[in-house]
Image 1 (cartoon, rainbow, N blue to C red):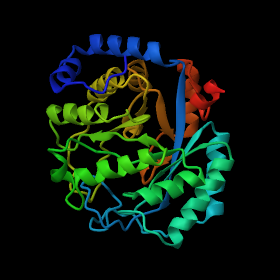
Image 2 (cartoon, helix red, strand yellow; image 1 turned 120 degrees about the vertical axis):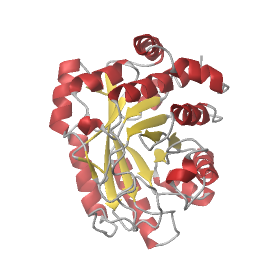
Image 3 (spheres, rainbow, N blue to C red; image 1 turned 180 degrees about the vertical axis):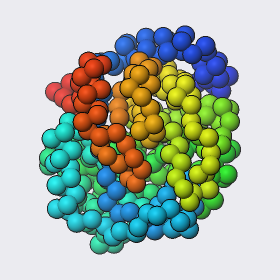
Image 4 (cartoon, helix red, strand yellow; image 1 turned 90 degrees about the vertical axis):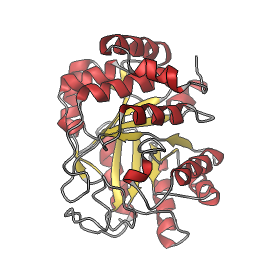
Length: 323
């Protein structure tokens, strides 16, 4: 049953379940609500890299950190569409474009992004953007251009958030999600573990996500990718079991949501990832890079899909089922 009224004690009880029991329960819920043999393959491209004025402690694109990421101007539409075509040919059905902006501004660059959205949409792919904060009108313009999803992660709990980011507030993030929802665009919103947060913070973040008036259609679970030059470069590596626990809990709380096994896959074995799929993950990012950090190649993922008997989920699946 879909619920938006989970309590913190209920979520803590699920999260603290012995791991094998949690995987079994999550897998049972997953089978009830989803086709377990399919995984949505998404590709994320950085269309404008580096130079971001924000101070997110995990991010190599923040201008204030020396991480070796070169500032690059907004890509040309033709380059983006060429990349999208390659991703589609390799099996991706969702194409996400990320720009290292604090917020969307009503200028020529935004007009160019709207053009890119139209182009990718015409290719028959679900098109997603992650461009920072945006207002209602900007969300509406993206929707009119054919945007299918907007990614804007909460990152962590509201209590721990100020330890990671000081240049915007948690409420700013929630307002952007509200603007996206009002525009009729699907919501992609998750978080990162390994930022130095407690298990309680993880539980609180999942509580916020599962308590939204409508569950996000997509919830990425990211493991911190430690990048030299960022304040979190020396944080310990995220334990795979913690990823599985987060994915399993998210699956139980939000049964119909795409739970995305996101950043950190490059450091996970095939068997690690298989357990994540068993616990309810049904989406991945494919391609050599996630914005600026390493990721398994399309070839590696194809081999893994073949081994596990998985197939890519088609684009716009829910709409096709309604036709």
